[in-house]
Image (cartoon, rainbow, N blue to C red; front, top):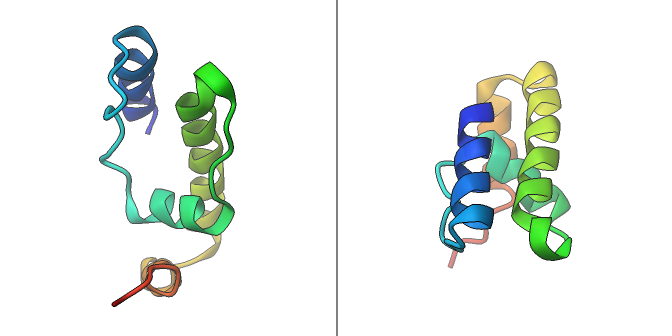
Length: 79
């Protein structure tokens, strides 16, 4: 959501807290797992989170929660 995105922006860019992420939904994690993250120098976290939120919204428009969970579980390695 936009509030979380702004929290990451403030903590990461302004305060320099590299552990400012977290709190992602399963759909956001699925988007990250499917497309990975790129390095955009100073704005990497902000740009990647923004892109993931767009992809997540599209995924949620197409798939049910059960389908999203299945897709997510198929992208996570299990030992």
